[in-house]
Length: 610
Image 1: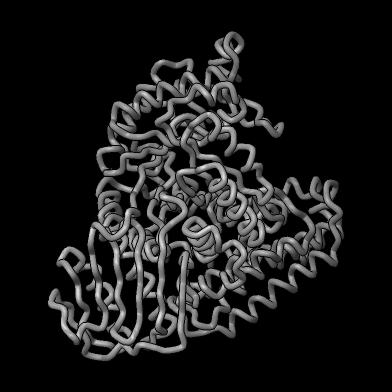
Image 2: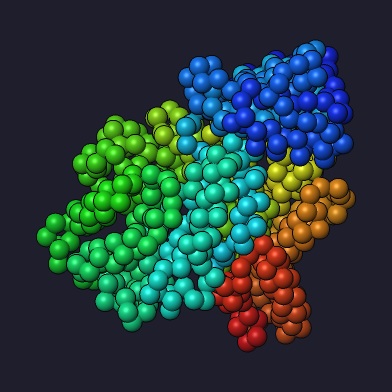
């Protein structure tokens, strides 16, 4: 049985119940009519025409019973299939919806021949979310968002966030968002209604401290910046404004204005204010204050000001915990009605230690692993699996409220949607039922239910591609060398010094990618087949090109020494793939931001032209 997420308890028999054409779907109350109607549409796709009725008689083959006294958990459901039909039980509309989604998956797998079974199911984590970055150039079209919501709701995800720095259409800030096709207030309300019907909470998200460069580079806002030049924790010198300065009183007024415009469009009582990676804090206007109080205290005091703002708007503040965790003595002083978001994207991230810190301080928290798709082109599959396992296991151990899997868009958001979907699905699987950690059929299950691929081979292809980076033995944190060839060609010499780069390893990686593409060509008959194949192929061919460039770089020792004819070949292929990416981008996403993404992608161009 290929259910995703897999239920807590399943008993299955050899006998089968046949859903007959021209049958009846019984509902115990008209409150669940829309849920039954969605199931009816699915049945029609396989040729089974039925009617929905609130009158129960012998013709009712599928029965839905909503009774608030059945179960204590509002997401718990039961399914029983036997000689009398298929019955779904729940105490809430949400529970019935989840039961119907499980039946929908059973129909996808077994069609009209449903085995006799008993399913008892409820989640391990109350909040199971997905966060999608829409501020690093790529803003999805509404129809793309709706399609993602449909998939996530079937996987029993119940929270969705869109990471925003500048991509909401704030009044009076046209110069900030005009080139990025931002979400409008009307867009947000449409998304919210669509998500709400599928029992997904749309949570507002607006970074409010660091990562504010898109605002602070403009004359109107640059006075709010901490600094315009600073040193990052990894030793790089950045020459941009990055964080709001706590030393500038107008900073909190600026944030208040953002909240005033954004929050009325959301019904959720939660609000993610970000506040991560304040790299430049204490290197500019707040330096004097930091010298007196310490960096942690300055950060904490500004965070509390943001907290008071959030309280003013009647919301619960969510914030990234990466800065405050470095000051354990301040974690204990956090208000106990915030939600700290513990994040880390490597499979060996110290989730155990960090969850323990917040748990012992009685601060509610989520664990926030990632899809490992960004800055990778074709993913980091095993790292994704290990990272999510680590987060979920330790989140459950220490009492996390929820799991929020993140899909970032660093350096241009080049990854196509299929490379992010395994991470969404795996997080949904484990955050619902942590006992699924040792199952070995995940690829087959998400192939069927995410891509509607009966063969299960799309999952195998994405796993193979997503592990190709390991063949290079150049294991760069939070990235792959395939992506770094394009984003950071100036660092390739440093990689040669740091890693034992072997041409045979690079050739092996290329071979693995090409074999996966051959396998992809053999798969057919799944949903959106042409688009998904083109997206996977584009990402994979970029990785092949990166490997070819890297092989020649290793041979030559420098870009200048690569033969001119090779550079011309690489340039031709780069232009072709970039044009393909542009076309694919516009299928699912808005045009704003595309030119900025392509500029980042084409950094390699100047190295190939000289």
